[in-house]
Image 1 (cartoon, one colour):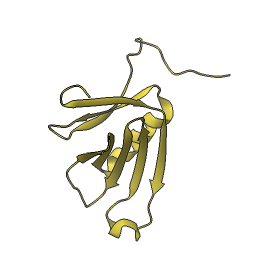
Image 2 (cartoon, rainbow, N blue to C red):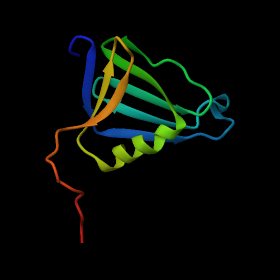
Image 3 (spheres, helix red, strand yellow):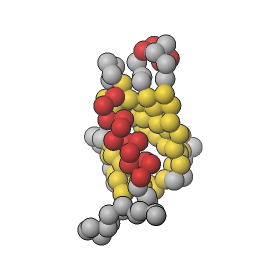
Image 4 (cartoon, rainbow, N blue to C red):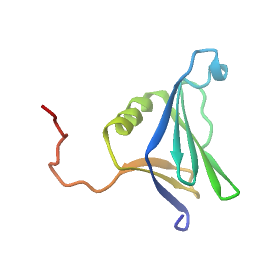
Length: 113
């Protein structure tokens, strides 16, 4: 972690689609991202929002991220179609994002015939 900015590459994630009874009707979708130094738990919520927060225990991080349900499709699209991917989290503001590496302009999508 550099000062207040955590950024780490990741290669694995898991998707959760909750039934309305799960999570007390608070979370519609979830994504867990496995980091070399911990775990990101992203909850996509229609009517329930909490503040992002993180904890560090024994050198491992757990980032708890809460987003609106309409952001789910964008996150899943990036996870499925881009690599390498990085998770970034500002420990002062609790703002996070996914990012790719620098890519050349006009690279386009790889098409296989």
